[in-house]
Image (cartoon, rainbow, N blue to C red; front, side, top):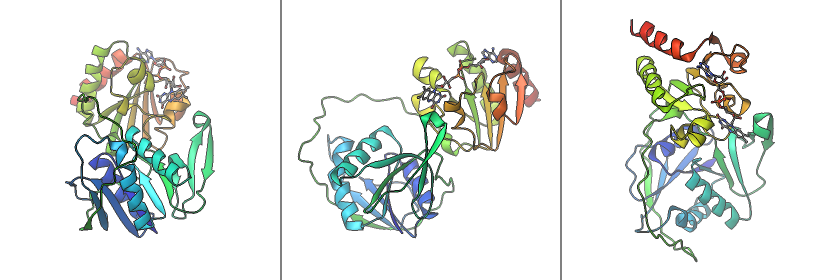
Length: 299
Ligand SMILES: Cc1cc2nc3c(=O)[nH]c(=O)nc-3n(C[C@H](O)[C@H](O)[C@H](O)COP(=O)(O)OP(=O)(O)OC[C@H]3O[C@@H](n4cnc5c(N)ncnc54)[C@H](O)[C@@H]3O)c2cc1C
């Protein structure tokens, strides 16, 4: 099977190409501008980067590559902007995008969670190229495999109606790569103040882990970037160890961590649902437990 991969970030491209290897025999990547990462792709279609062109306006150029490649599957990175492109591409082909995939087989049957994670829907595209977005952590293989694929120049095709760029503002960069982190510390609303995250950062340093959070911590409190919240509408992770601190364990969050090898929960409420998911649970005030853990682990 021939698979095309398109991503916004180099890390996303590398991860999806590695994951696509397990599904198809021919993996082809689409890049905009020069591509400065080693990727596991047999062919790379390079669309020349344009000045003042919005990301979404590359959709026509990508559509032409899909036609040429005759790929059975287009895998798109699950970022907001890639979602916009995938939607446009599917609309051009009179089809739709299968999103939030948590499982995909070599014969292109997919599974995704519906009703906030309480049910699984199985879907398969009918005919033509299937447009798919897997949830972060679903397909990834974090190995740094690289294949010396051939590079083919692809044309930039100007869309019939372009988005006009009025101004741009730099967004703070998120440097953590949670889907590839082996140890993740999840922060929930049990943390009372933003400054208390410092204590969690110290724990992360001691265990060599990255920090993620529940949705309210990023969306309501805005203490951590949106890109780091875990769950049905955020990241789906597969770490070796997940430490949930002050997290109640609502299903919308736990669907994002239930494939972790080991879950450790710290919560002062012994009836918190997170304990049903946890392999190890500490019932106690995180403000006492976390400093004690840091001290103990340092020793
Ligand atoms: C459609 C939809 C999609 C959603 N998607 C997501 C998603 O993708 N990800 C996500 O995370 N959420 C999502 N949510 C929200 C989700 O339902 C929960 O509201 C959220 O996960 C709860 O976050 P929390 O555990 O941080 O907060 P809370 O539920 O308020 O839990 C805080 C916990 O901290 C404990 N605690 C308090 N103080 C201390 C202390 N001092 N020491 C120890 N423990 C303490 C409490 O006992 C409590 O269990 C979604 C909701 C909806 C409706």
